[in-house]
Length: 279
Image (cartoon, rainbow, N blue to C red; front, top):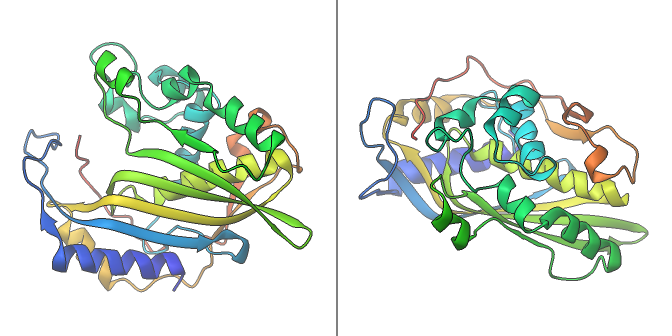
């Protein structure tokens, strides 16, 4: 059992047994019914990527390729345009969050990255002083929220720190998420930001270090309880999955492509489970 599998099962059990019920829930299922959930507050996990600990479960297949493409849409294209995500990357699941007939998700995610020129600033800060303590990506922008409708960012803050160990330099990352669908999105979001961490590390020729993951509201929706019990009953695969970025050190951040990533030794338990998303 991987560390991610152990944490996954512990969190599922904790939510089902001790979680609180949501009240005045905003999300709806596609049939219009209110999507209530059970949740816990303040979930934290630490993974040492350098030691092969990656935040991906083997208890069900996780769509890592699509998840990584979303990172490129947000942080390379710096776009909120759904046609870019659909046509360039073939990823469709954000379409349910289109704002009106705008073809966008509102001024969110990539639009915020572009508005504040975030990636340029992060890379410049790390170039000038790798040990500065101000390498923060924040997608929480009240001005943008008031300007347009749209889903408020879930994974909204990332912080980066550099460590020297002997002759090696490691890049650590911390992801803070306000809300997370435990069964559907947990490992997708975590691995997305591991990919972003790897891209920045590769830009400077550093090694990836630790990944810290904090979720404020970690929940399971009320139409997912059977799937949750199924996951608790499954025995994890014996594989030890890890993500590899196959480009030379000091490859420019903007020259890296989704196909440069490879998920190695990933043989998750099947069959896949079906989930009705809450919108």
